[in-house]
Image: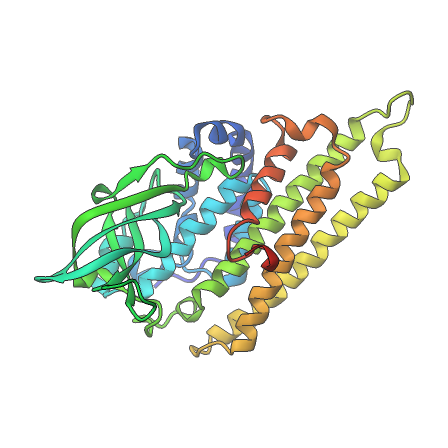
Length: 367
């Protein structure tokens, strides 16, 4: 059996494709999906396979290293970082499915899951399984997903909270995709609605993350919301890093009106840039300290303590919202640079604001 890939080797692979991600970001945004060459580079380097076990031909990676991958990709382009994060995150489901079904879904080299955690579908019992109908929103990566997963209320009668909620897995060719992702940020994620109508789903293609995992890889003992919180924060930090770099480059070239000096020569701008860079250092340190704590816990194959789960989620919300404040402070001094669709800074600002609206990391007083 091959050894786990070293974090250094994996991160070197990611570094090697950052230039193409950055160069194609505008075209991907305009298309509303990743450019084919970017998608192929991600698949070639197996970045969607970080949480899939070796027995399903995955590239199993520890949580802190996976977060570094998401951050690094997001530092080149936020939407691409989001898609790598979401695509890899779907590998978590492989530990909760019957092994034969998991192998069918996850072993192909181009396998990637899109889907929704909202229980927007209904499943009623029929012979050998369930008949499922429903519509779900925000399926990032829907343009190239091979399978879709979605939560449903099973044998629901009145949409009560007591309904059993489980997830289904259906191949992409059974899904109807709806062109709904018309947004100002994260446009390249293709987070469209999808639906199924009276689709037959065998019982073996249903699963629940509330149950004990079938496999015992550590990642399968990490609660989904905890994994999502840390992952969203890693993408936000990467986007913020990109925005700060772009603003500093702009400030070095932007001449102050009626002066021979440049924006970067202003003391208040220097202080703002230094504060922004210091924020990233501190946020990154906090993020990976928390990730190491979570990883240490799940390696024991036990349920994480509730206080760790709660603290992790709260930290992620605060971190993402502070990323927004940091980039907003830079935007206030960026002039017209921020408004052009070709602007790397403008794209980072738009993507970060869109990410910050996700219910998992949105400011609590806005929920």
